View 1 (cartoon, one colour):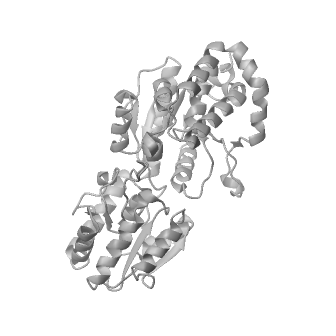
View 2 (spheres, one colour):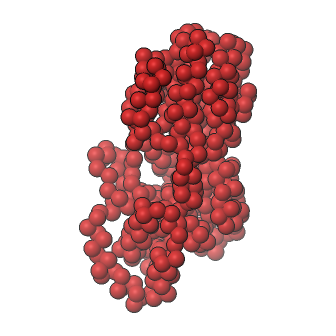
Length: 419
């Protein structure tokens, strides 16, 4: 058997499948990899798409190269003869998939091609694959399962679940997954809508590898330091954020605001900032390293998140920047989109505002109430301590994966839902 060598190892030998790794805007995934390695075990990071310029110590264990797809000229007929039923299912998945857009279709083809080329090697080396994204990595994990019987699990992010209705292969991929990891209750409900079994869904949140020491600070004074962190894309709602700032300035609230991030709408957001006459109060930092973002959290008096549902249906789940701000004790004012309400409870761990007028009103009230400001800071930090520790959350992931590994070897019963 192709898995005979790896199966002789009692603990799982796990391949973590990424599309690319490490992507600068996906710091949360790099944190989780480091947390997993710190917990012991055998973890290899495999990337399906080349990413140039990453530090050597952070690079994937193995990266697929474009030229490797040429080997499909050999592997397609090889697997067609060796595993005709598996190849028929793979072909049917291509013909029947309801890919929402060409990019999603090509991503999944990449994943299937990766599996065809790497199946023999993967089957000998690993006992489990975990797809970190539900697109190309999960397509590869599913195809590896079809070809060499390699058990797999997968994760689904908001983009996978909502962009143009969600990934086109989700129905196929979720049926054979040992378990599906989601980081929010909203994601859990979305997976149920897509047909996943509740018993195989695990809510395991994200987090920081180490929570920062809680900074004691007095009630902030004017000019107040506002902060927003996120990519300049439609779902982040930066036009709403600028409207909030515009209303605060009209109300006579002095502030300086840092907008951290870059993306395709950066130019549009800058122009809107000028149109509202906010250019002297708003500083666009562009993309920053996480160490530089930490310095922004230390200085911030308030964090603003104004996410919306994009026209494609995409939205934020629970933005990691919100959890980071809460860990630093920075009060958050956010719109109730995605899974934001799972961490931000209005008036308790933060502020929820449904429109710019409400946001400006609540921010002004908070900045004039030292008691409320201090209470919300403390409650936000407590939430982060209970929910946003990557070491604790990855321990739950490891326990779930090991249980699935034992079950695949006939050594134990089903998995559980983790929180």
